[in-house]
Length: 145
Image 1 (cartoon, helix red, strand yellow):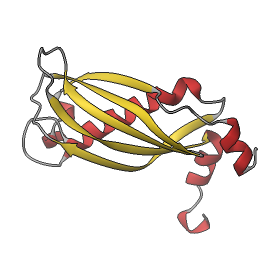
Image 2 (image 1 turned 45 degrees about the vertical axis):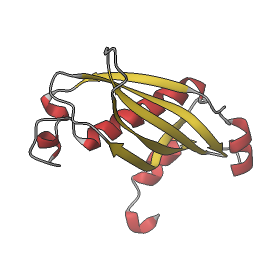
Image 3 (image 1 turned 90 degrees about the vertical axis):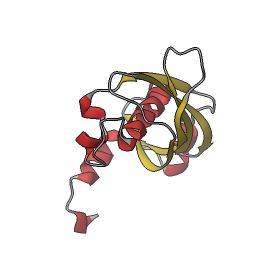
Image 4 (image 1 turned 60 degrees about the vertical axis):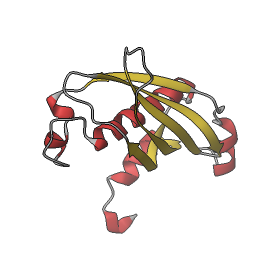
């Protein structure tokens, strides 16, 4: 296992990496299903999950073997309701790299429209780590960590 400084220098990722995910809103994506409201529209936690998915996709091809990223912080602004059946595109871009810490900006837009309809935006922070070591630690009793 590399030391902390070796880990950071060996696996540094360049800012500017980006990815877009497209999703159609289903009943499983709604505030009703998420338990965060009683309306049949895209739930804010689902919007955030799509942003995390795009962030992961942006850096996954560049990660070394055995490495992954995990979320540590997020900020989301959900600006418009999205009904069942509507499609959205969520784009994440790696904007800051501070050692193992990665900061992404994201924006969600209505898909396939002539107008630029912004659904939401925000930031996601993730850290690069060794996947197996992380899982091993995660399954230790909380009091033993």
